[in-house]
Image (tube, rainbow, N blue to C red):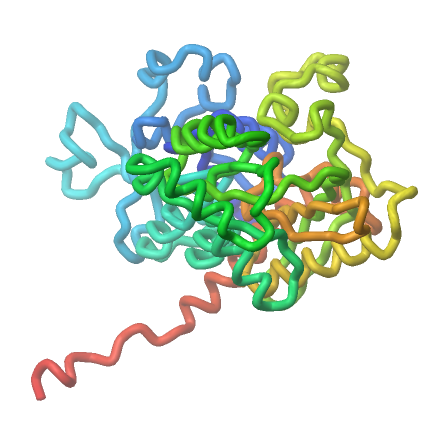
Length: 402
């Protein structure tokens, strides 16, 4: 009988999207193919400390934080090539079990990333896993970092011919000195000469810290609120007659496929954190509103009345963006449609989307159920690691002793 592979599901982390990461992780662990894989939940607390233990699988554990951390085992990833596991931290024996000839190791075959936001989706964890020579899912360092920075991502894709809305990015350090200078910078940007304007963090997701500025006073307020969460704010025009569509893409350098299109439904006209994750409709009827995450958002899957040309453009641009950025695993690419002009614009990419966008693949043709989606992502990670291990990394000490 083939031995099961240990899949460490990494989640939590030092991000305001911490809670959403927990939901995504618990969802995927529940549907992981247990005939092939042994899931090991690895929770990174907001303090930055790492933990393993069966209690992490229970929602009640997170209501008891931080006291409940005493019920799980602290571990750490040592970024040493070939370590292939998590090192147990045992206070009774010293850090990492020092005092023993060999430290206790939790063996890991693949690290499955289920983070959202900073210090998880942005390339930080990916870099650490690269140093450890570990097999991990999703994007590598560069596409993860580029995808997190909304402004730089937009500019990279605009240069490749993908339409984007005008945008300006401003630094908190400049705003702290002079909000008037920041306003002048914004209004001097082509396409941003007039209010209202849309303000959001440049390096964050889940619609946290967003706002609509209708006058100079509210522009100041939106900037101050955004700078609570990020050191940079991105400002874009407000599309009056706006529609939003999202497309999920899964693949690697060899094959890329796109899901059907979804059209999120917003009550306010702007999708907020509360609308994405805290609405009761639909999810409440199932009795599981606490754990649905992005899957609980009201949406129209594969809208039949939508202009077919715009729908296909969204699918084509999503696949192109995924490939241009060098993404792998699963991403969700979000677009804005100006309904008055019948024009579609790239908005942002989520390289680790909420709920891994599994709900889009269940409606795709052919259907890709959640377990199959996870299998595909893990297999892609293993294939990529095989390629990396085949690369030559040493040339000897020729120059040093010449």
